[in-house]
Length: 303
Image (tube, rainbow, N blue to C red; front, side, top):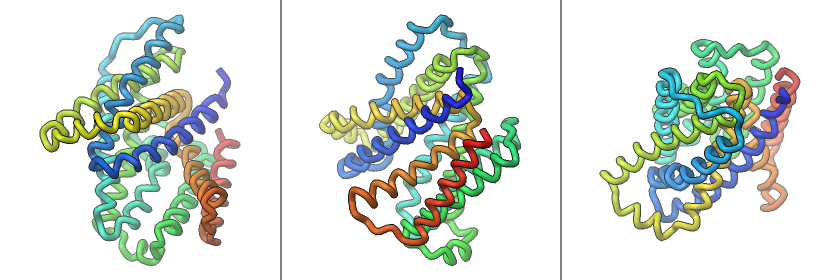
């Protein structure tokens, strides 16, 4: 297996995530954010299951038995991802959501920090430099695109939105690290099989939790999902493909590196808005783009 294989896999995941987001934005006109989150899991599960079946059929390795480490970290990752998503969605209901969202963008740094502290994910000095630079670039881009004054962020270090944003970033970081830990717990060389098993089991858990929640709180949402089945299938397919990419990349490479490279999504979005929608790019945005690009280049040289 080539050591660089995680790079194109991560970029594929980024593209699928960007496309999925477009579909989710369409669904928000018909469903609340929690139900849109459920669509991602519910309609993505069949595609993920088919993928695992294909990988298992083509693999020379039989499906490994579940182990306690896998079960614990799959559950931790699934719940952490749900909580992080809900917190991120909740930010948009707050008056100063832009401040909180900016803090949530520190996910890549939190992944590296928590990974080094508790998961034994060793990061080289050059890797730390790359992650810090890329995160700084994403924060600058977020500030510029949200039209929030950087001084207001510095002046609100401990406000509610900032705390929720950090909690969301921490949740996504824990999810990423748990996914890698669960997948590696099988101890097999077939990274596609281990990543596929982790993905399917985690989506099953997340679907169950979300279905129960929506069924209790707003069961009428299921009929709306049925009427929007075409878009829901699109979201489910792109979500499954994106998750396949993320889970596989984080099985092959350290989660912090994968998340840091994944921040090129912000560059893609900004370039698309500039080229296709003729939106003007400010000097601050260009500075953020240069920081992200520089961080990614340093990261690839360090990996």
